[in-house]
Image 1: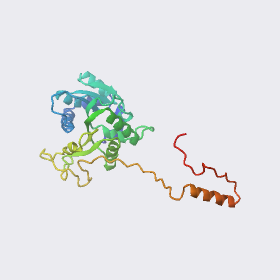
Image 2: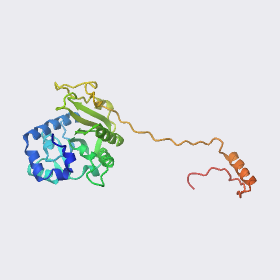
Image 3: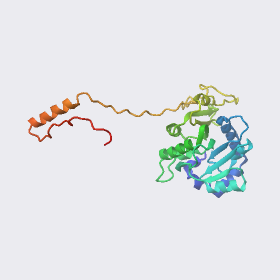
Image 4: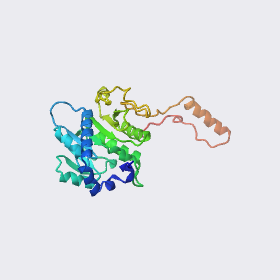
Amino acid sequence: MASRPEVVAPPEIFYDDVEARKYTSSSRIVQIQATLSERALELLALPDDDVPKLLLDIGCGSGLSGETLSENGHHWIGLDISASMLNVALEREVEGDLLLGDMGQGLGLRPGVIDGAISISAVQWLCNADKSSHNPRLRLKAFFTSLYKCLANGARAVFQVYPENIDQRELILNAAMHAGFAGGIVVDFPHSSKRRKEFLVLTCGQRSVNASVSSKGKNEDGESCSDEDSEDEENQTVCISDRHRPRKKQKKNNKSGKGKEWLLRKKEQMRRRGNAVPPDTKYTGRKRKDRF
């Protein structure tokens, strides 16, 4: 069995000139990318108003996913860390705008300008520390925080992911929830080891959570399945989970027994013990204001 590419080498090294051309020339990969991109676009649930949207393709590679976006009449911006992949995309004259960058360092786009985002087989790369300075949690935080800022209110982001294990899945999902997103995992073909696909479907801003609950996984017949059918008996992965932010601990202000009278008693005790104690004044025991 071939090793997962993200454990072989960093993406900018793994996808060199040779691998980039090999990847793009494979008819099987082209077909898989088109199918996954169509499914991601479906889960985006864009308004059916015939108005082209500005979408973000994260880990766009040579532009295979972007072609699906263009065929559906949308404008798109592609981001990838591999210069070789982007060079192939330029040679193929894709219609989207291309950016060379590391999503783990943030996206650097203007706030609220993106109508939706997709990513095919890219986000799980952030779970690996390819350099000594890489911290997967911090890189995921930077990515999801910057993504949340650049998305328009109510926009969705759909990521097709291949988490290596449950810990990676939870790491990615928790980072998204802490950034402010609502949503969860949608599983297509949950009982098929070969066809199983996981999509992280996130909603930004004030869009109703009920809209995200309509995202259902597909079964073997290509029909939408219920939450019970989408739950993996082994991994216990459910379709949708609402955002949950840890509440800040409230500081307890316990003033019982520690007013002016308590302070005077303590000062008197210190005097009886022979300690030097400042004299009592009208300011003794008075609470100071927060600001002078």
